Length: 347
Ligand code: SF4
Image (cartoon, rainbow, N blue to C red):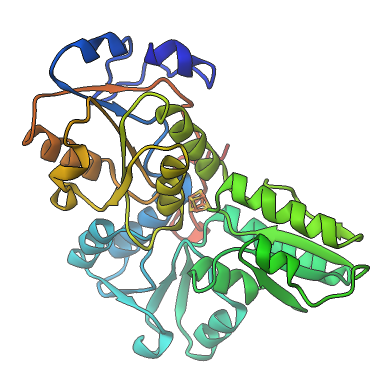
């Protein structure tokens, strides 16, 4: 039974779900239909919802164009939709006219980007996710206490570039256990670690253990910097993989948390694929599969999940059900300049 197994995570409320079939069970696999089971939770997190709302409200209140540094979230459909409304996405602030309204993406930016925006007299709205901003503060506090800060994360990811550039003092990037073991530091060096918010919980624990084995004076938040949305989606996918033959992860190729979900599927021993939408579905991936699991990264809209289901329907009769699982009630406040009319609850 799908429901009881996953009920241990936490029962869903009665909130309507487009696909929900709360009491669905795998006895349906006796039919010839393809069973599609949706992970719960999946898709948008509170940081992504906030970032998109910041751009939308800015477009409503200010005349287009509104400039956005980097993709506001890593999803082409979201970016294209906002571009159609008048957002202009740039990779560097050189491309923004002086005094223009500019939004920093949910991934956060380095202090030098903030300084550059000040020097250009840009009007800035900061869509950095509050959970990323929390890691910035934590890293600064460790550095101020005289510790070398180890950032566990992936080189080149904008969140990592932003976090490294927000911490004064020495910050070293460690991507995996091998790099932790190769750090050229004395074993008694005072160290602290922080992490990217979208890492694999299991991999991160391995890196932290490697650091703790090598260094005697090291502090850090364990895996608590990995955000609630990442942890919830990873836990749900592990459960889902016990129920299905194939895992489809809806998300962008450059979405860190989506890639981690696909990796968890592969580590669970089932074929696992990342796809942006139904147009990327390869029929061979699901050939012969009786149960297909679908999840979505934190920046993937539910409409893309529906698009993938439609693509499966074009291949075979499909029955869709949703796992029981955690229902998230997290909301983040908008910047004060945009907050009018918003429910200010933050949980
Ligand atoms: Fe914030 Fe987590 Fe969403 Fe990133 S994945 S925007 S850290 S809530």
